[in-house]
Length: 95
Image (cartoon, rainbow, N blue to C red; front, side, top):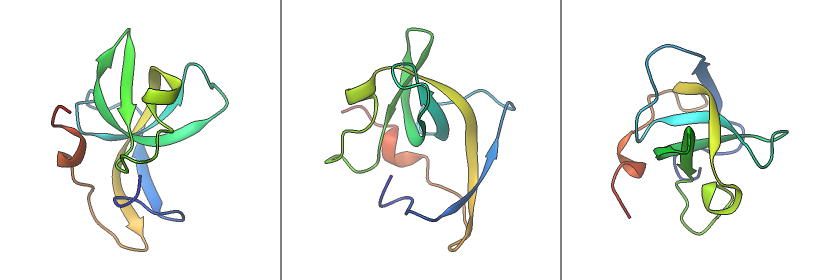
């Protein structure tokens, strides 16, 4: 998820709450890799789950490689080391 997130960033994640929307950063599990939890950005709803992308277009460890995912929770903010909300804009435009 670089440049938005870096290894070691601490995140506040909420399970439930408002529905997931395009552009949200989420914690999810790919249906094809159920043991792997990832932090990715929501691109669109697809096949009863979500198509997820990473913010680094050169890395394809997202739905392009693993398919549809199920969201575990929505990332509300990063609280350490650079506290702040995460921008929704990076993944909301169509490619």
